[in-house]
Image 1 (spheres, rainbow, N blue to C red):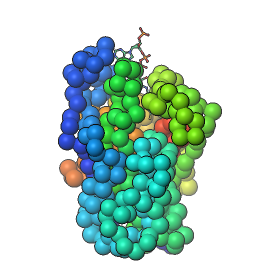
Image 2: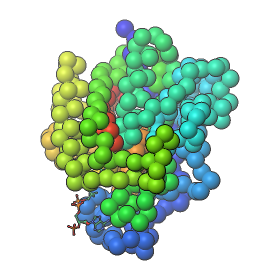
Image 3: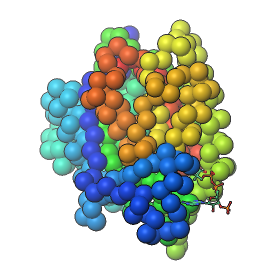
Image 4: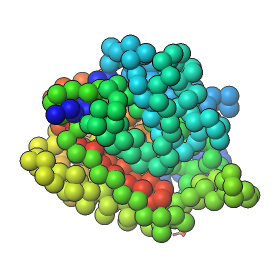
Length: 318
Ligand code: COA
């Protein structure tokens, strides 16, 4: 059997930190309200001239170095983002160019909003299992500050910019045990950017019905954990670390409670990063690998939900 495993991790955060106090100057809100409803204390904001690909490039270079692979051994780049640099080419192709990969490897983007990284990891797993690729660069990066309505207090407090990356390689032990994905487009209007390329309009910013998203997120994250454990021979009690999408500390606490997982076993970075969409899981993973919490051999559960709704989970041994 061939399995996919994570050989290395990397991440990047823009230099500029925006504290809640700065938002108090922009909209009618308070540090207290933001922290008590979301757990967020600060977020990083990209420079005007800093793009999603620019951020992904640093994260990818770090992941390649951490994996110890030759960049020209990469045979596929999957770039999860909802904020691509250009309509086309894909951000994956732009990243391939910036990395100087000269082997004509496959490259494409995945658009599943905040679930983008678990979608991309699931696809990488299937490419490895079928033998179609052996060394895959999976990047999650978003520059949500550029599609936030900075006058809308119900959304602008939530989001931040950043990038995370992993190198996935073929190995003879798991690795990824299982991964499941779902989507339901009937919920599209609860979390959306209404204007786009083929449907232009005057609403190019994030709109969200927060309380409905919150309810759906808690319920779907609970059920997907059971689903991804099915037929793996593993149980909730075997999970060493939950590495979830970082949207709201209250969603993370509710999920941990439903899993009977002590909150100390949940990697939580939302206080420092805000919601960085496709970047949030690989960013959290890299933080916990670098500070020594996540060790080789640990069992990780990753799960995310975002606009669509699209949601999914990955169970893997690091
Ligand atoms: N500062 C102060 N007050 C605010 C505010 C802000 N930034 N944003 C909203 N409010 C107000 C509302 O106007 C409302 O006031 P009202 O009762 O007078 O109408 C009140 O706070 C409660 O709003 P509500 O939306 O019910 O709050 P909430 O407890 O649901 O928290 C979110 C709002 C956005 C933090 C929460 O719904 C959430 O996190 N949802 C999920 C978001 C998410 O995860 N999105 C991404 C998924 S990938």
